[in-house]
Length: 431
Image 1 (cartoon, rainbow, N blue to C red):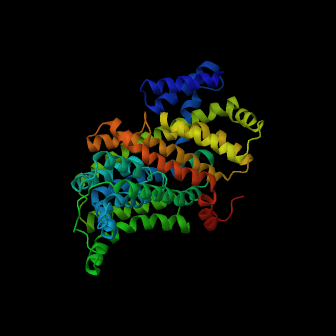
Image 2: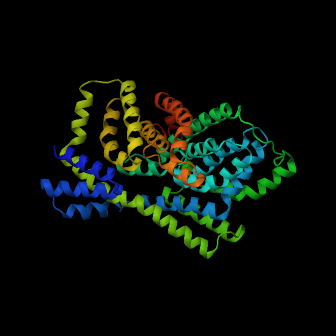
């Protein structure tokens, strides 16, 4: 009963507009005061312990990489590289939007960061070429969903830390699913643009001279994601070291080669990175409180017994998981949703014979689709601000893209080898 009251308090505070980490901290503290199931000092101790894991350092550095790429002009150079190959075809700019988000996802790990970096560049160009404004904004929002899924996704770091799953296996396990999502978006774009009257462009011509020119200009930009992926594949460094190395690389190239990063812009980047990172770290700080009360109340074991008494098949259990986390993604942020439910549901999935890496990627994919669904729809709000369109218009235009992502979700859920093949190839079969 006590645990139910805590969840009611937390969701009520969130509904009233209080920050998520404050809502969680108040609800967890209220539990300790009301039940006496632990000393009050647990609050401060668990907040410190929640931030003591060195792997957390990779989060602000991955955010920093994305911000530095945007300020240094690397994002724009990456877009030009993609447009060289597909800019001439009808809908090339729309397809380039997806491709650039895939590339940018390899360094940022955040959907909002991808949208904030890429949409201001693409939206004016798409309007100029005659794309429908609603379609453009919805496409940019949908493509940004790939940011947290294609490694190094910040939600995967969080999931690994709260469940003791391998960050490397989650990163590699998400690679093919992310590309499947991108493929589904490409198919939808092909269908959508057939009826659009887009202006032709002679700006992009496939010549060897043009290729070497755009290749030279974008090579250093494209090496940033290569550094991260090579580090994950080879295991020559920890994920935190890889993030720091990538940040240093982008900083040096942006400041001394492209000469776009100034002291003033660098301070602005550090400020923005610190603000974004602080919101994430605050959630990690309160994570320990909730983990403690869930353990004390034996909620995980109770839920496990409740599910297993019905002896569901993995197929049925995954249907329930998809519906449940799709709904959660619509009403709350991904991080608290994972924090509360993943430690309880992961052991159940293991008992049913579901690979834990596969299960984790399914959960993350569901929650990230929630970035496109109201009433929360974080990416919809960002695109509304950047495009000047209403939230409702973009939400309606995003429905076909949500459908395309749901198709990819079915494949990810029920064809588990698309998740497990790559990590098993690199790290061996999980035991």
